[in-house]
Image 1 (spheres, rainbow, N blue to C red):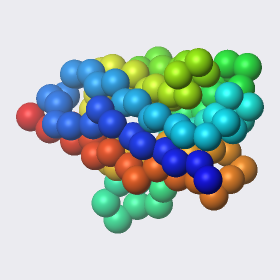
Image 2: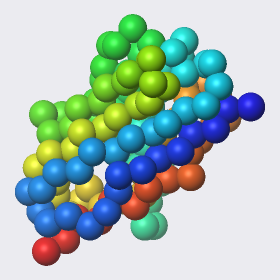
Image 3: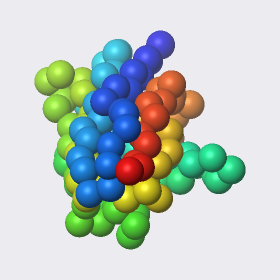
Length: 113
């Protein structure tokens, strides 16, 4: 059984920064591609960023140059550094093991003045 737990969300002003973390239990973390998704009210869940087991990254166009995904396989932890935050980044952010049914419970990010 794999468990994922996100943390680091909160309320931030436009232009601010947050760092999300996702702690994973189990041994599959280091061998799998990991994703960050987000879901805003009334919208579908969307992929924000992805990182392969070898560290290759990919980003949605809306966050390129502002967000950075990274991972620490020794700590079984996934990160999302979010800079220059905009109100449209407001959403619940989830981590996910690609090609699996494993999702975290989500962490709320609110960008507002």
